Amino acid sequence: MQRVRDRIASAVVRANRRSEEITLVAVSKTHPPEMVRAALTAGLTDFGENRVQEAEDKIPQVGRGQARWHLIGHLQSNKARRAVELFEVIHSLDSAALARRLDRFCRELDRKELPVLIQVDLAQEATKSGATEAQLLEIVEVIRGASALRLTGLMVLPPFFEDAEKVRPFFSRLRELRDDLRSKGAFGESQGELSMGMTHDFEIAIEEGATMLRIGTAIFGERK
Image 1 (tube, rainbow, N blue to C red):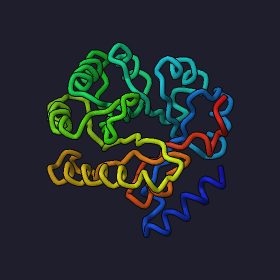
Image 2: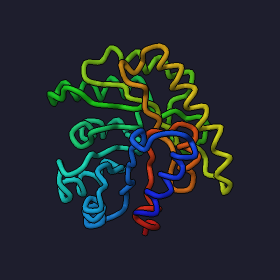
Image 3: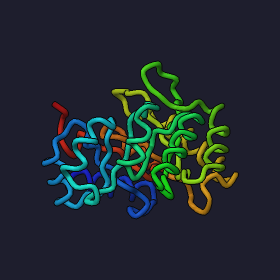
Image 4: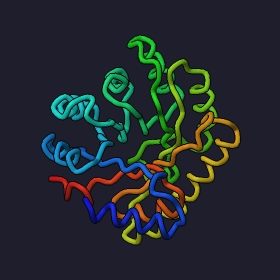
């Protein structure tokens, strides 16, 4: 854990940024509750889960209010209601239809606010989800008209490259899209989060403006 913090601190210095700008989301998917509790003891507060079904079992065991839970994996429409109940933040909003569905469930469950990020599919990989750049403005407008959804930023899951430097254009493009939306007032008073960067490429993400890092392997070890 300390090694991860040291790497983040070094990257922040190189990028002439401040550590306070970065939220570390520990990706706890497939790891048992006891490992999450150990990470809490080590000072981590934000955890990312990929699947609603896994989170349903894990979150009650760790403690609903003990951590800030992020949904970072693809959200199926039939799991949307449960996601509203379980997660503080959803990173993987990828369609106008899903935005409407989430907002409806927020109203039904009397949830006043749900922070969301739009996942953007910049690589057009068949195995990954996300909105296209052309769909972004429609989703933003739906969120703008929603009663409970609050758009806080954008997320990207780029292709995996052995040479991590090759992901830089994807991070740079997401920042450009965020800056354009920010100029249109899409994020209200906030600057707009950039959820990007994982174990093998988070230093580059920091250099390109990441504000949320999704790191699993470097914290918890290889998944079994």
